Length: 388
Image 1 (tube, rainbow, N blue to C red):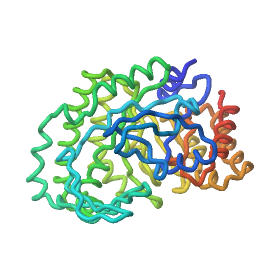
Image 2 (spheres, rainbow, N blue to C red; image 1 turned 180 degrees about the vertical axis):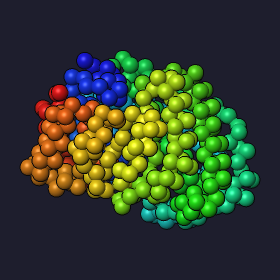
Image 3 (spheres, rainbow, N blue to C red; image 1 turned 180 degrees about the horizontal axis):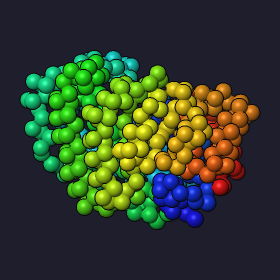
């Protein structure tokens, strides 16, 4: 059974030959791993193209044509079952806008295409500091909402690159997926947490208008993208509904105001026979029934540090959904082989015995505190014990 077939079965909540495997990383991780022996390759880059920055792990613009190094693709090195092929198009109100307001050696304060003022760190990744948001009331929103009635192919990025990515994934018999954030994250990025969270209760009609317009906006643009490049095997939707202590709003509010639009977009993808994986950080355990009802096929990453235990979750929900993640990066970051073995084997062996559709993945993204040797050991333990 190849990777593509395996993932399709897992996302149908069925049991293939073995569990799946996939991963996300923080950019700085590869800066450390390269020092620890992770393989690199030489690449020729022309001026204006993107190259890997060995100090930050980010990709930056090439200023001088020449030979550069970058890490070997982790998906190829660890032979993951899934591969991201694109689909993350520009959803901002003003595509390409990036106005630098203030700058130092360590950070930039910018105003972006969502009219949000943010502080971005130059030498480390992570969430930017939220400084201000122009769109903070329904009245201001009305000045800009008509932009979302426009459908522009230019937002979708390089069509030829996406086509090539899909072709390569198919040739390698890997499960291809597109990904994007959706309405909860869009509100966070456009309106700001301190504005949109109270508005869920105080200004629900504004929030519903925002969600409806963006849902239709997504559907129109993905119709074009699918027509232009073809259809991937699945979709990864990124929505952080929770934090370490629970949901950002009550399950009832989530159900009444947010989930109808999640369900509409998921149903759109289902019309193309695409299974949908939901990424949501934090403790979202109280929202699992809503997530299942909305039609999501898999929950990821199930943060252990926010209280998740995939074995207990699977005992409660069984094969109503598939599971991806929950390998505790705090434990792996101890770089103790015995602790790593305990963390990986308890979860993998229990899930295997229960015949639960599961994908090995960290409980968020692999940080640089986890040594290359440690992560390699964790993957080896998983592979040796992942056959059902």
